[in-house]
Length: 142
Image (cartoon, rainbow, N blue to C red; front, side):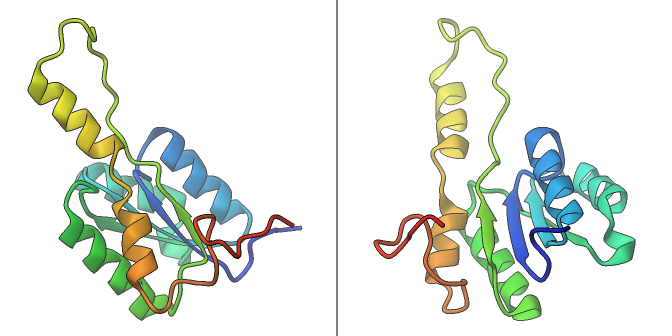
């Protein structure tokens, strides 16, 4: 029995790793998933593998560190699907650096991507974001 039929999910960093696995699991549970990634080629390949042809997923190229790109993508998803029920802020940078050797620019890049909750903020700005979120005082766990 699928647990997410009829739900619309939005996942950042969905083209690889944990994000890919999240998209895959949500699709298996019956959700439609729109996902973003900064890597256009990898994102298109992931969408193909995850069920784009069946209409289960759609890929949008967007960089989570670019607020305008994220806002526009979320707006497009909501225009097409009327809502977003599930939002996963997964995007980040795999930093395989020696922290003692990292430059200020490397730290800034990682902090910008990991400290960014733009998709959450953008979804909150939308009048079509679905119901209370975990940041809402009305959120209750069932």
